[in-house]
Image 1: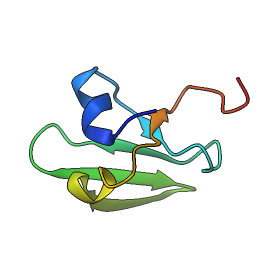
Image 2 (image 1 turned 120 degrees about the horizontal axis):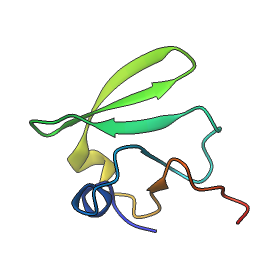
Image 3 (image 1 turned 180 degrees about the vertical axis):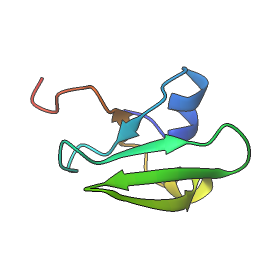
Image 4 (image 1 turned 120 degrees about the vertical axis):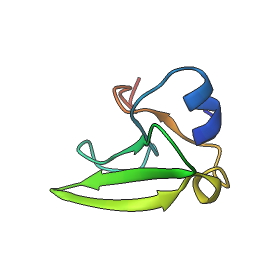
Length: 66
């Protein structure tokens, strides 16, 4: 697992935390310190620096049970 910044450096476009539901994900914006959090039809801006406080991020297409 990794921080959001680690996954961005690897080229991952969508990521989530393992305990999130299957439809929730975080998508970094092209420019700036912001990312967008999507879940059940909502979009919420969040700071990437705040997300980097957690190092359990995984690519959104990874099955948690694997």
